[in-house]
Length: 519
Image (spheres, rainbow, N blue to C red):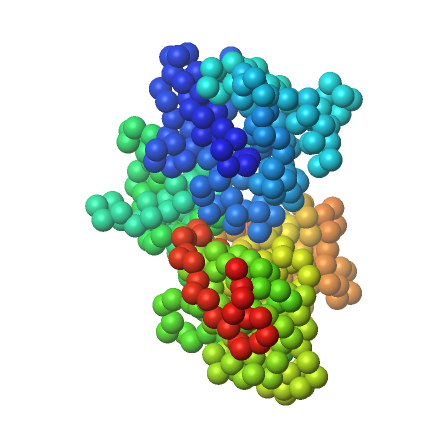
């Protein structure tokens, strides 16, 4: 990651060349935006994050697609806005940073100045008593690339990165498409376990069976272990970038999980559509169920013409493949009753940048349930509108594992019927969450609990290391030896998709003083 023109692509090319020179065939950047480099101490997989919606999606979900971020900073240019943004993204995702100070071969290079600037962002070089590796490199000449790779491997050893390869594969969708000849094709990064040809899989709201796994040269792989990027064929549909992919026990399980997620997504979409417009996100999140494209309409008012144009253009540049941001009206000055009427007619939100509504406008907006949002910092505007865009899309529902219990005996109880005397071996069992029952590795039931007891007392949850009695709402066939897994269904924001180019918006005015003088 790094600022534009600081040499990210050149550095990636240099790493690929180093790999080829060492006798290893290139990478898979052309097809899936990732490639692996063999080092004496192991293989390193690089993900070309700047070009992929998956990185944004993972950041929103707080997940970690990568183990480290290579921050590229030009020695002649220093820390720039996108450099600072990249640092913030990495810190938000809690991913360690290794700095590559590029272009050190240029006469005007000042690597020590870069190191000093980075201290202002909390990155202190090891040479200065900090804990951040900073490696001088020249992507153009190839110098320092070997040292960078060695630093990555060393950092990995210090972090003691481990993944269990002896279980079903789990990973993340990097990108996906519908290929005319091959059907849905998902590019995934396996993060733990081993994904095998023939495995039944669930990816977001879609299920399937791995028909083929392909490497960068189109060659079929029989299996893919942790940190391996592959293309997978066989899903029933195209998942979203950022979705989790999991191998499951059988086809029935895969279909059941996918159908459950689809149903929950439909229910949530309907609930949001019918909910009262009590706040901004509900107001702009309402959508017709038959809409194919989504549009967020905005009225922009600011204190000066330059701010009007800056805010308007920044908002429209947020447009993605799934949601278009349309500034329907913009102008300079106080937010007026006329602005509110325009918002009502267009079903728009009002954004004020260093601009507030007058008394009549505020009263009218309150009566008509039009939300007015005012800001003084541009980044807060963008963050708020991104949230609004997400609410135009149906949210995703993911499972969060809570714990498991082993059924050791059965007994009958009034009201509950058959009760499974169980021992909680991991995590916790929660009375109000959902459970699935596994028998010999296969799912035999999924549903809710009718009761949870410790001895004769009703309890809300039971932690690992304790025995309990579990009563099922509609499953009288529980058996000794069954495994009860407890999980929570949680909502995550919908992936907005990749940003797309937007033409410069035409100037518009609300007729306020100075509105036509915007630069």
